Length: 462
Image (tube, rainbow, N blue to C red; front, side):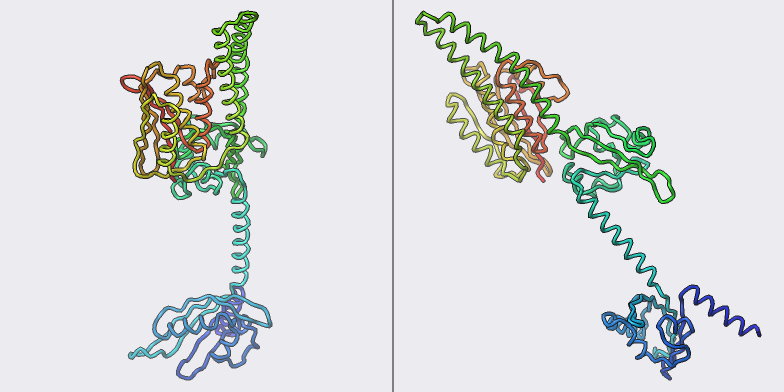
């Protein structure tokens, strides 16, 4: 066998192994010359004369216009590098074609040389990968708990829509940031190290952690952390499954609060009622009867707060966009009718929309009523102010009355042990805190200058 024939055999074998055929087209004569692998790819007997029209007939009907358009563009000097389908013996295949054309001095195309690559297996593989990704994405998004994907450098690389809904971030603004960004305490724990140390023999690690939303609101979460393993079996960060357990913690705290109220307030008030009732027994004494009535009313108020809290925890209203100004003006108007002796004003912009539950009016009424009822001043002033920036709406209830007692201010901090509550305002503040938390807001307390209180509710606007 001579060397030329041997090279041709090697060339044909190489084309067959690579699934790549070659062709040459003489545009002047209209002759198309295919390699053996081209014949095999298109399912035409070797040596048979092939024309451009015959080639075009093998192109999938839905792709013919595209191929013709691209070939016409190539004849005008544009690159020819396309993928399209062909139909061979009733079977659809995918090919990739590349060509270079030769032109004369006038720009008239003379000839072309090109290659055809059978990429059917690659297309099937790509389709399978896309389907797997689609199923993964569907599963990823269907999980109701927040999912956070973190790399070895503690950087957030992905999250599902439940995470963005819970934390208030868009995927683009959280991707690439440190996972410390969502910790209430940045030194709380290391996501990756915790998974590696706690998971052990291919199990997951679970913990309770205090996290922080974009709004600044902190909340308790149950985090289950799984180690990520790449295709080479190497660790590649972790996946965290995060569940907001605020409702569970709120209910536990509610039980503690109600237990203290029952053990302290109700017991003390019942002792008062019993004492005055015994004194008044057999003696027509209006003073004792008045005290009995007054203490009974206190008990009814405490029971009413208890019912409100229980109702709110059992069926918390959904968040929605509200016109905060309308809510504030309505609350102030009703408060003026209930407390004509007080000066109650609203200081608001023309409008302000924010995200909250419809229970916002209950929280504001509680704060305004507390400011009036628990003031020792003959004439108390209360101002409800609304301020806004690009992301937050702030509602301040400002009074010039007595400072809120320390034991009651502790309900504003979930880390403090709740002490016995000596009157209903403590339970009222706790209800306010619940409403604000359910609205993804933040409640804070400051002293007014020169006297009084400033209680601020911050709500997300979007």
